[in-house]
Image 1 (cartoon, rainbow, N blue to C red):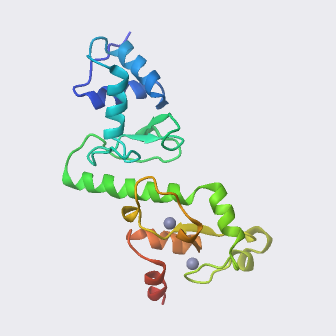
Image 2 (image 1 turned 180 degrees about the horizontal axis):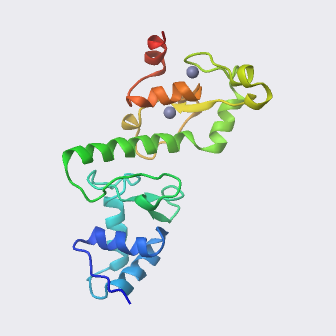
Amino acid sequence: MTEITAPVSRFETVAAALRSLGGQARPVEIADEVRRLFPGSYTGNLLQSVRGRIQECSSDSHHWKKKRDLFYSVHGIGGGVWGLRDMDPLNPVNRDGFSDSVESYMAFEGAATLRTHLRRERSKSLVNRFKKQLRTLACSVCDFDFGKTYGELGHGFIEAHHKVPVSELEPGAATRIEDLAAVCSNCHRMLHRSGTLSIEDLRCRLL
Ligand SMILES: [Zn+2]
Ligand SMILES: [Zn+2]
């Protein structure tokens, strides 16, 4: 039997418990796992403490302390299930969540911002409504039209890009159809390449 030594700080304890649970769980399950793995490591209200550590160390939470970004909300805030970022099957990231250096802090911020942005663009029902009201499915930067190039296969395909920089959004603000722009996959990548380009900026850069 392998012996697990208690991690030094509490967010590491929570992360270790979540890892042991397979990477995704509810706070109440995480608290039980902490109790099982590290008996006596917590005093006071364990569940409250687990919730607090998760929120402080998750860019998905309004209570994020902007230092470590270890946890993500699996079904969105309020869904109740939390995951460990480095075990996220949909979003494989290769980051050392425990490092405090300035460089990795900035990398966290960038990655967290991009993730928030992409999540806003992936709401299925919103994107469907968005596409329905478009007059054309051509890219609003370069005019590429998937249907015209790929025929039947490309028919109806276009990506949605969220125009408002995530840094300028109120926490928890809903995405409106007007916030989205139709872009082809190439232009979408280029918009995100430096993190700050607007549709107009990118259009001006086309050669
Ligand atoms: Zn384009
Ligand atoms: Zn985008």
